[in-house]
Image (cartoon, rainbow over all chains, first blue to last red):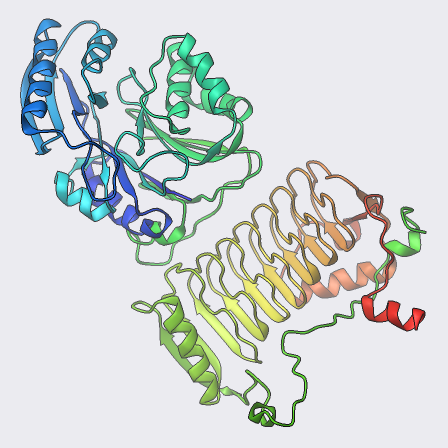
Length: 313
Length: 279
């Protein structure tokens, strides 16, 4: 089933972390397996923010193999070594869990090469790289993840999020949404639905050299959009193209450094509710999520089939 | 006759429903036979209000039932907060006013009440409604009036995709536009759309009618345009008037769409009627 949500504050920096937490907590009943946030802080003028994980969450009833602290330490050392090799200068680092890290670094050079090499390390996955984007995903509901990663005071302009009910792949972090559009800075996607031409599309994109970390059908949307944007196609056009080229039932929300967009398939089979005002646009699978940030009565609407909408910060 | 769309077959027809939910068969040993299930005497002048802020759907629905038992005929629900499954299963005459928006599956499976929603409704509003009147002041989500069997279901704004899917009776009135697959597999009943309708309208419909004031993007399989008669124009006018909707298109310019009846080979009789002929 899955729940998706997105919010964009126009020309204003607010506590988007808390906004997203409230919306996603309201969608918990649509999927309690994992929760993910992709949030956009004030873009850095210099350098990047990178979020990555070097192991899986070893929660109960999860297939992930438990790694020893030595293994984790070794993997982190390897990441640091690669960063050094590429000339990336880490200015700030922090971690909320033994397996997930946040690096700020200055870098001028081949970002794709750096990211690709870091991911050659066992179980290591870059969740996001961007000037504003920070992508956090873990098992548990919205409040659990928010508390674990200290997102309650995340200041930014916009963000997207996802509560997952695992249907197509495992309950773990690598199959959780949102997906970062590797290797493009600041592009992320959340999706509700199923794609039926996943493998065909995946083979096409793999031949072009794109990497897939999970077997989750939603990952393909991020890579697909990224591939289009790499060829100079605007986000809105890429989303229109996806309606014809991706098969299945879907509603997805995509964010870039200054845009938020949503697309709905031809069958209009997956829900979405939108609230638009001068200062803020919020969209979610259910109105009850939006009402968690607007307790008063608001005027909302459902987008129709094959509808694509893009909002600017 | 089957398979041919004759003009007289496309006009209004009777809508005798059998097998109502409230129908109970007499059994002398059962105590319940003294009263009719779910049916209580209410006084419409007695008014109460319920604040839904801290209530779950189940609690609110129970409170509505309790209010009915106490004889309240008008129930105002404050702060519904777009929660799901509010006001379902009311099997009695009752005046219900929601002062706000509802989430999914609102006021489903009802039989009799008059409901006004001062806000928006989510997916599958008034699903399987048997009788009564529901008026929504803003927009409605998808599957509006799914499997509707009777009554009037009105939305002043736009309705989403699959409006009136599988409906078997009653009337759906939409002041604005309707989404794709409106009237999908409808079996009886009438849909009135004052605005435009998206793709595949009336796809695989068995019977029933769709009246459209605006443009239709495309017709679904076996949905054909029919001819409106004087009686239907008068009926439309009256119906829109009662629904408090001012259509931009004059009623005489509305177009009527019906089933081509090429996709099926059943006869037009209800099971009970067929029995009469054979027996």
